[in-house]
Image (cartoon, rainbow, N blue to C red; front, side):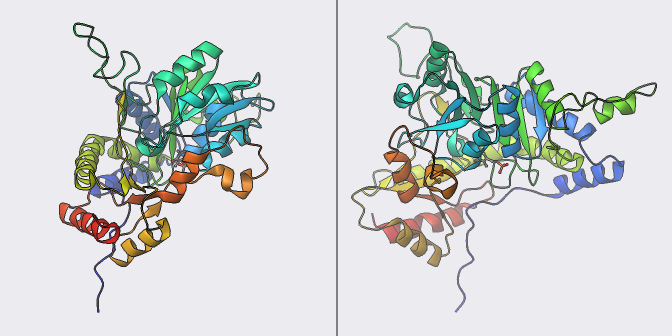
Length: 399
Ligand SMILES: *Cc1c(COP(=O)(O)O)cnc(C)c1O
């Protein structure tokens, strides 16, 4: 008996264009952080409407450099979510600061701004706001709170390239008749906080293998560009272009977080595909939402009135009434040829964070980890494959 082929949860869209770009970089003779990376940075900044961008070796490195460039360190507290890939919390630890976890909203899986006052202390310096799985977090309220308390806001937009947000003017339904129209949606990464970070891991919307980007004001981005290359005072390109002999200096300790030019070239091709890939993701998510609407045992993700997701992932959450457990549903889907993953992890439940005292309980974060299931969604998922996923979910969970 042959089984139907397993439909994967995610698959990067890579083709001849990326292969040709990698070849171009390899044959150019300049393979690490050179002209392709510089062009990728410029094109990426233009894509999200950011003043400047710095590429680096991963989304984790991007977070680390962002926090470093802002001078966060020992004694500082950074409010963030436990309900995220562990890189979010780890980056806070890398600089010696302390993560303070707040719980999330059930419909978006993102930081619940109602809980910010309970997380605040005299040591709070920053909020690391995650746009989880591409779903915009409530930045309008997070930014207002941060302004009130003099806090920095860094956006972990690892999954959120192509997502959009509206900071001013409330939701589309807000305001009495005749009031000014709501502000337009803007790309996430402009940034709306002081800095935003992205990942190009193959699970994200564009990939360079591994890779990351920080967007923000030119002064901070310039500092990040130095920190990613051992804080060297002159870049390799600057020395290469100098008329005479110049010597570089190392005024402080930095890192090797460089992106290769081979990856930069691939990233530029991925950016060209971005609008088409986001449109495909949104079409597929809309079909899932329509197929599962009104199901008695499934809670569905919901876009907030202030933003639009890029649908980096689509997930269903088993409701408290559902008689089936998460593992049982996951195994039954897999047996039907539909690969899937559990919901986003919680850092506070891992050994690496077990000693960290919590400032509040995190029941929604834990509920989502234990009841959410990520379904296949990627630009090249065919309608027939998606039908198979939908049928499998309906067979397993009923409805
Ligand atoms: C993937 C991810 C990261 C880390 O990115 P890498 O490129 O894998 O280092 C950080 N934060 C979030 C929310 C992520 O999803």
